[in-house]
Amino acid sequence: MQQATTQSGIIDTSYREAVREAIRDAIKRDERVFLMGEDIGRYGGCYAVTKGLLAELGPERIRDTPLSESGFTGAGIGAAMAGMRPIVELMTVNFSLLALDQILNTAATVRHMSGNQCGVPLVIRMATGAGRQLAAQHSHSLEGWYAHIPGLKVLTPATLEDARGMLWTALEDPDPVLIFENVMLYNMTGKLATDAGPVGIDKAAVRRTGRDISLITYGGSLWKTIEAATALAAQGIEAEVIDLRSLRPLDDATIMTSVTKTRRAVIVDEGWRSGSLAAEVGMRIVEQAFWALDAPIGRVCSEEVPIPYPSHLESAAIPQTPKIVAAVKAALGRP
Image (cartoon, rainbow, N blue to C red; front, side):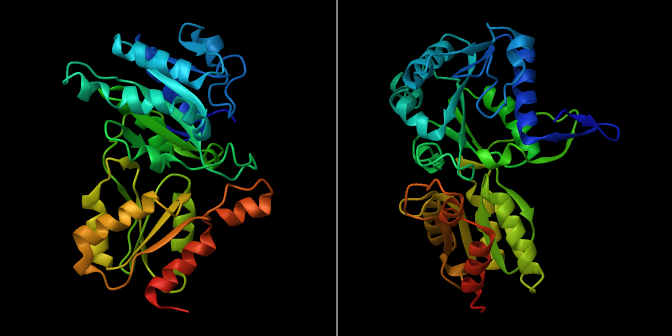
């Protein structure tokens, strides 16, 4: 799909194109910025995000790498420490585990271990989530693991504005920033301002207001959660939807303001339930807003299995709108 101009200052675009435009803009704006990763050049990226950028921007700025996540992530760390502003693309979050040593033991720790003498201003992008029948080695949601690591910022853009604007802000950060793009969002289309620019990366957003329950989520689950809230509204239940946007740092203030108002909460997280980000958010609510609660906190997470390949099993394994609706009704004691 090509971007099409509608009214003045507004274009019809897709999430994929918003990310591509963010990369293009960053490289043109700052001579220190370049993109590196597997199949991002001639192939155009496994999700076609970087299609056409090699021909437009050249091999110095769009760098195809060998299939060695540890190697090229390490090269990105070195380039960042030497004054560049690299964007490293890891094909999927599962493959990022091959670079976990570089991310955890180097990028996240250099500022601390150097006594604040230097940092690693590196941005790492990666696809996350299930829904495309890519089987267990390509379909997990491990962003909650990275949110466990001090020294990192962890972002989960779910809207066109965030897909376009988070990269800009991340590249200005003096420390490593990880951006997780849910695979089911790449084809999402909508309207975006032609002058869309940087957005904040440390605050959650209230995507829908409500009085009866707070639905707290992020990334690919946001739109299922909004769909669930719409279905619940038809039954007289007004759910407030919070898009976390950033998993590290978490915006406790927005979460607690919402929960204190609605007095109930359900957390929707495509990660596994055990040790999940949902568990962290739930515990923070207990620590900070326990006396405001009128019901136990609910969770909707992925099933405790490797993500299956068959479409019907894959769909059953991850949070879906009916599961969210059921969790809300359980929290409200409604049939």
